[in-house]
Amino acid sequence: MIEVEHLTKRYGRHLAVDDVSFTCEPGTVTGFLGPNGAGKSTTMRMICGLATPTSGTATVSGVEYRRLGNPGRQIGVLLDASAQHAGRTGRETLALAAVTMGLDTARVPERLRQVGLEGAAARRRVRAYSLGMRQRLGLAYAMIGDPAVLILDEPANGLDPEGIHWMRGLLRGFADRGGTVLLSSHLLREVEVVADRLVMIGGGRVLMQGDKAQLLGAAGTLVRAADPVALDALLDRMGVTGSRCADGGVLVPAGPQSIGQAAAESGVVLLELRAAGSGGLEEMFLRLTAKSELEEVSR
Image 1 (spheres, helix red, strand yellow):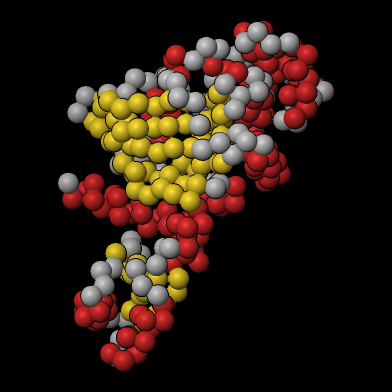
Image 2 (image 1 turned 180 degrees about the vertical axis):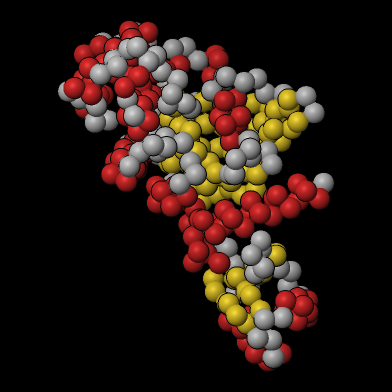
C-alpha cells in the first residue's frame, strides 16, 4: 500500500506540490495523471525518498521509503529508463541488482525472459539498447526483488504498440495477484484500460481522485449551444451551475434529458448534448487540466 498525506514541496518561491493526499490499495493499478509541470514526478520522487518533502508524509506499507530495509525487495521503482550504466549488458545490470539485494542471480534469466530481453538482447550493452528496450530492462530491474509495490513514471515511453499491449498485461497481472501499482503516463487510453483508480493533479494540487468507473460515469452532461448567453440564462433559471470547458462547451451536473427538455421549451438551440463520460478519460483530463490552468492564471 502507498499512502500520501498532505505532501507539499517548495523550491524557493515555487510551490511544486501543494497538499497532495491519496492512497494506492493492494490489488489495484492507480493512474497518476496530469500535464507537464503538474507535480507528478516531484510527488513520485518524494514517495521514493529522492526528494525531501517540505511538509507531509509518504509511506509504503506504513514506512517511509528511506527507512525501509532493503527497499528493492519491497518496492520496485522505474522513474527514468535512461538512468542505467551504458557499459553493462542487460544481464549484468540485473545480476548486479540481484547481488545488491542479496538475491540469487539464478532469477535473472527468468526476469529477462519475462520482459522480452532474453538471448542476444541480454548480452548486448545498454548503450546499444533502444528506448523501448531500456524501458523493458527498467521494468525487469524494478521487479527483480519480487516487490509488492511498483512505482512507474512513463514506463510505456518508447514502446511500440505490441510493447504497450504487453506492458498492460504485465501490470494488470501484477495487480491481480495482489500487488500495488502507481502508474504515471501521458498515454491516457492505456491508463483508462488498465487502471482501477485515478488521481489527477494540476498546478501541484489534486484535481480529482477516486474509482475510475465512478468518476467517468458521474461526469455529467456536456452541452453546447448556438447562443452561449441563452444557454447560461437557461441554466441559471434551472438553478444549475455549469463549468465552462476550454472548447466552449459547458459541463452540467444534470442528466441530458432534463437539459434537452428545458432547452426545447425555452427555444434554446443545442449543437451538442451528451453524457460527458462518453468521451472517456481523455475528455475528463482535458477539461480538468484546462480549468486548472485558468485558475492558475487568475491567481
